[in-house]
Amino acid sequence: MSDSDKTIECGTHGKTRATFVCQHLISGEHLGFNCGYEPDDPDDLYPDAWCDKCETTRQVEGEWNEKSEAISDIAVICAHCYEDTRARNWIQDDQEWNELVSSCCQLFQRRQEKFLSKFKVGDHERWDLDQETGIITFSHEGEPQVEAEIHFVGTYSRKSNTWMWAWANYLDEEKVRSASRRIREFGEEHKFLGLAAHLSDATEEDAGHYTAIMAKELDAIGIYRTTKDELISYMVITKARWVKKKKLFWIF
Image 1 (cartoon, rainbow, N blue to C red):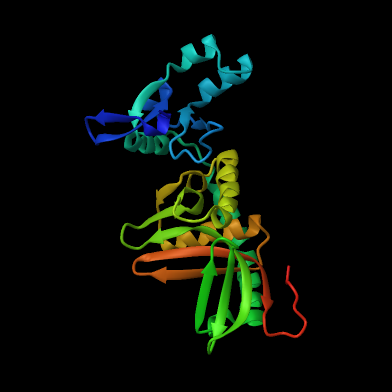
Image 2 (cartoon, rainbow, N blue to C red):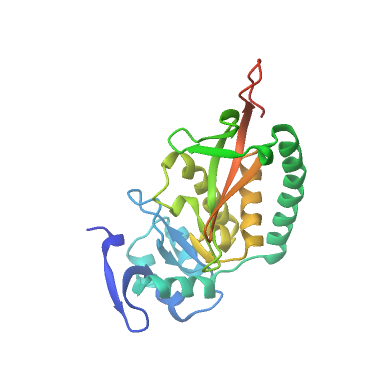
């Protein structure tokens, strides 16, 4: 049985997923938050985590060994406590974050205007998505007009005011959600919690920011979103073409 199959009875949250963190994180604040993924579970929602002090020891030792493990003294907590612990100890440079958001949004405001002008996707009355190929088709009066290659970014729930990254949505095909892992890796490297955590409290504005960041990372040409009930799905478009044109071509 893998770690992700294990459960724990939490005095606060009841029976839920068991997770593992160093002893310092449990009661600490602003200690830093480092995590590692098992090769057989690269999309673990709650990977083992440890503070900056433990990370320094691990790097000095060159690995997890008897000394580094003794200092970390890994403890078991529930998934909900893990999220609280991560938020309490995560250290983020808010100025760097604001600069990233601003640059990405400015870039994609211009690209989005160009994309909409060129492919008129807002004028087509129907869209159909094939997740296995990653192609969305925009149609008008029953005739395909534009085909585009998409990658899911994530979903925003207006009901719970939360954001979930596409890599964590196992209901979607690997073809359309795999690219979002790059943003998780970017978030962990630069210590941006909203990019690293699979699920977080958010606003629709946050969802737009996350989408713009992924669009820049993938050098996308446009952004598209669909709404069903209280759920908004965001995607970036990396290629597009007019189906009806005599000379078919991809726009990069």
